[in-house]
Length: 288
Image (cartoon, rainbow, N blue to C red; front, top):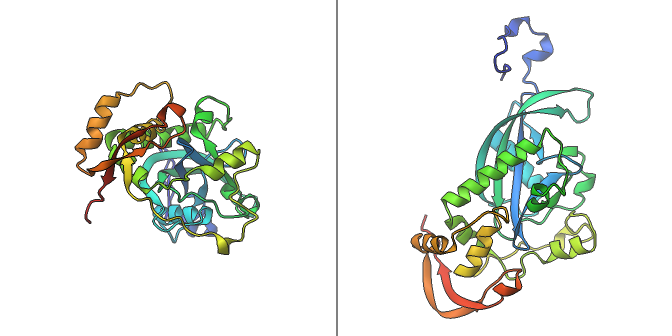
């Protein structure tokens, strides 16, 4: 596998040194912008420091999709079927460093935006001591990035902006994504993030707890309200963006996935004025 820089000359492989006959590790990187909803707001998993999404070099023997899956598995406790949606956000060029060597240079990165299923975002322990620096990560509120409270390297800010735009555009086109996420969300979603944030702890994922006692969360019961669906939809967009709530409710109902129940339920959400009851619906999963 070989590549050429856009607009650059094609070099005859035979004239290359022998080491260049082997697929090089600086061909392409897979950067994975992993998003999740916690505390009714959008969060993104970033490398430590002022850097961007988790990244893995794509070796000559694997595909970019394989590299994305390996990255997710290295970071998360329950990677199997963890992504709710996964989208390719486009190509970017980055400076990369080959771990364990002095070699560094420019590489083209394929950015994937991943929205995790509800409650599938617990990090593996000891990530801050990971042997691969680009997999030392922590969760950051997207709102902090948008308000410049979290500084990002100038080279990676466009990467994250592209990934975020890709995710938001998909949610805007297909609001059923919100219904699926909400139907899968447990009642106590978000608690441990809030506690660690208040205590000033790093988001390293319960490092003191043995992995053997961590159990994969069970899916939600599929019962939702339109009020909390609207609140969750808002989480994907900047706070100052205007949203037509009446039209949004009609779009939710137009999915034909909601069965009206003869009951009311408390509206989940973080804002006090949402702490009320509303008509309940059951989200019906499409037959595959």
